[in-house]
Length: 86
Image 1 (spheres, one colour):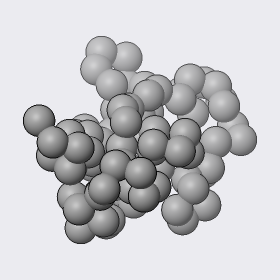
Image 2: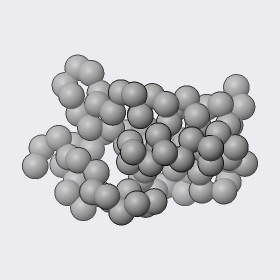
Image 3: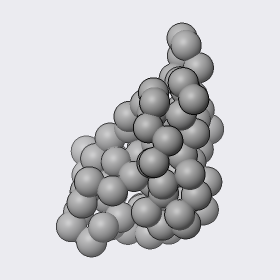
Image 4: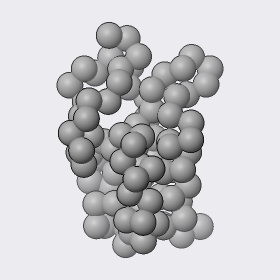
């Protein structure tokens, strides 16, 4: 699987299913530089994510759950990423 298709698969998963089941915990993407990306940016920036070179800041390495961090903000749009326990 290519870097582009893996990143795009993560972006699509986050955009269509932004909560982990079971539990309903909010998800966010972890980019190749370690920065978080929100569900809206994952959906809106599909073109960038789908054509990533793997080291350009648009490569999604995985998804993670935000349990308690109230200081977690999207690196692209600066929107606060929802925490499960606030």
